[in-house]
Image (cartoon, rainbow, N blue to C red; front, side, top):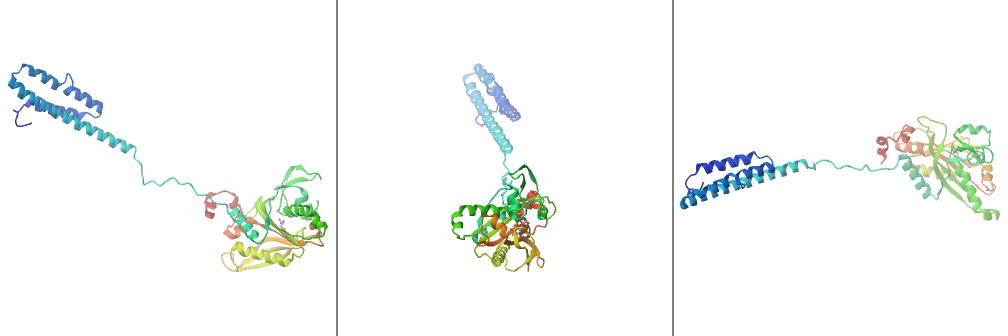
Length: 357
Ligand code: DAH
């Protein structure tokens, strides 16, 4: 209390009790109630003011000043407590709304191409650079394109090499549609379309050129570590006036060197049988380095297009010759990426697939 005023123990006690009362208020509503008790119209300070009326002029002065000072002290205590409560409330709110800025952000997984798609794209790119067109065709195929036109007439024993799925629907010859067992169908489709487009030139005896690959899905009744009922093949066909077996060797060797990104590669052609090529071969490759070194690995069937197949394409076998090959894209992808079980490609396990991103 200010020393110019005589001590007023009742006023000191009043200020003290106001401070305590304010301190007990836990929320601003409590504090406003407490304020009313001291500073309100019927509050204790107002009561004291009213009491001044009975005092003399001099007493009024000193007592009035003392009461005023007490009132100011109570108001200051009130303001201080208000601030405390506001600070506390703010602190609590900040705490409740706190963000942990050290939490890692939510990541969007980066997508990537499937390893078979990666191999497929490489194949298109490499053959594209060698002047091959890229063709696409139907997966539900009729008997002519899948079998008969390829030297595989009904009841031919070679049909059993390729057991497939049949669709509940027949073509004009009464043969059921099937899911194509190989992309060799595209040899006939593409060459027939070509022959059709160049009919006049063919009649004049001109010889053009067909150079195409046809990658796509194929189907067979097979399921083990190296066979899946759905798999991928890429067909190649190069026909012209002078396309020879040497061209097949050079083309396929260059493709393998580019695909596997190595020159340390041996290649051999093993005699084989396909009804649409004569002679026919299996192509094997062998790496000189790496985990597969020293083993012959089968990568493709191939051969010189059979004269009857050329006729079925609408081309004259006296004028046209060339080669075809059919390789497993999945097989090429397995060799390139070191995958032992083909089924992993088709299980959709993201832990496996993410390795190829
Ligand atoms: N179509 C054959 C198969 O799926 C592979 C094949 C062999 C394709 C020789 C060819 C070829 O073009 O010339 O087993």
